Length: 276
Image (tube, rainbow, N blue to C red):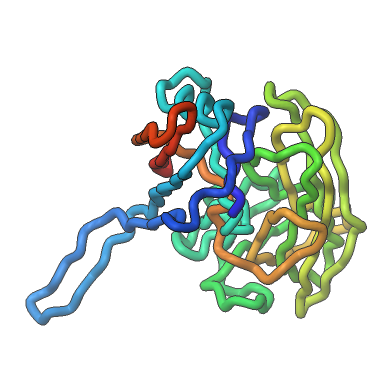
């Protein structure tokens, strides 16, 4: 099982955790449960946050020192965890294009009006809705906050989109750990049609790339047009796979680190991480 941990620009692949003590990633709902006089239940969902517990029967000295350092606050944050068991590295809210909260939070339109809507193209999972973007004649972008990347690891961005009037393409802009722009890649512009289709783009961060800003870009048109989109995904690999809820990349804080010296020179460790 693949887990990667560290600050932007300093992500470190961790050894595979012990299978005898399988890694745990419990998602806890934050909010109250109310019961009316008739017995009807209302569940508040303020947020859903995860707790990871990773354990190793033996760790090499370098990894053990790294975990000690982050636990003691010696490594500048924020700390990111890439969870290899959750392929979609977008946040759950962004991956579902606002379906949980019915908002456009997490998405920014450089031009035109962006709203949440239930009228979206069909995707493999029946989400509650997605985004409606009234693009201007000059075109523009709907872009996300930056996401950490690992140089040399291919990534594929995908989403379902529909528009009979606007040609759309993916743009992936790469930055170093200081947020200095490096380069960008783009997919071929496509007019997905009223019925919609899945748009994909694969790119590979190289060199000192540490962050990517992904955007759905509209080409200029004589009078603009409306595009709808749902089910966004950023995943490792050379091709898009079935959409999955996000959470594959999360900002975390170290809650606890336990160490046992079963054998001289060998450390058994258990790490608890809390999603911020």
